[in-house]
Length: 346
Image 1 (cartoon, helix red, strand yellow):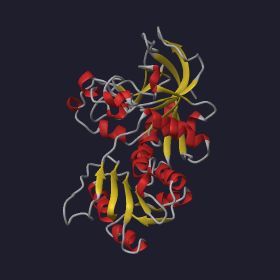
Image 2 (cartoon, rainbow, N blue to C red):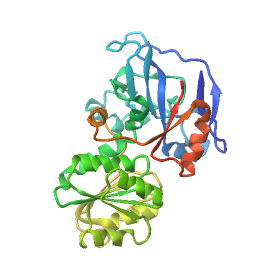
Image 3 (cartoon, helix red, strand yellow):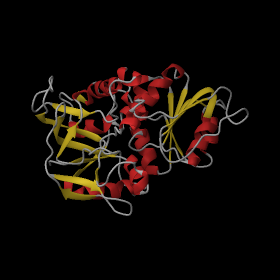
Image 4 (cartoon, helix red, strand yellow):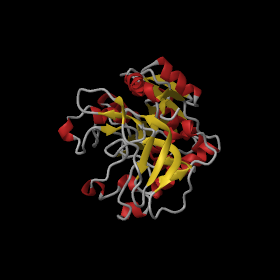
């Protein structure tokens, strides 16, 4: 089979030929229909090989959807051909967090060497992939796998972030979304679908600001040194009750905290290396700062249900398997409108 692999520092991902895997006991083999491309992959590829903690080469792709191709011994509840999406943040399944379906916060994953597909385990940008347990598969039903596959991260991650702040997003409130790319443009749709809040979007390019307006932002503001002032002006000096930073770089984190109203939530989702300064006189009174990770299995089901209801729609650019390296080049160059999706089997 063909797969897109990262071989080590200083190399670009390449399409290679590998043996087709077989599922072991309790595992499921998928024929991959669609696989998403994410900025998180660059975080893996930018680290020294010895700092990764898992062997290379690595098949990339932590957003996956496909059809069941084979069942390992003991697997029940699935049939060959079933269309499914992969829940990515695999956990141990037995710790207190996993028992609640919050495998994204598994307390034993690091200890046991459990890693997500594409971020340590073989990923979804391949013609076939092995899923370690059927509990990590969610039925797709009639959903289009091409537009649904980004929901496993680009939908689930912002949903988990937004859901926490729903009590603060009452009528008359304001939410700020910083970064309106793959995750941010979904966050805007979620905020419009789930809350009555005014949504202000921040980004650095006119194209991304246009996308933000297209998907429902009430206001779109350049993300620069004047952004926090602009948000204050739009909110009558109060600031926003919830701020979601999908970039996470030092300048955007500073903007996020500067936008926050009294008792606001600041949620730093992006992994751009920024850290918030929090303290008396630094942020507004009683501001809460969070740094969430992915989402729970139950929340993925809820996200897919929102898609079935037509509440969210991911903008995608598709690439054939041979074009997978180009997808990463386009993502790095800011040329992806929404989310890049690879079609490993055509």
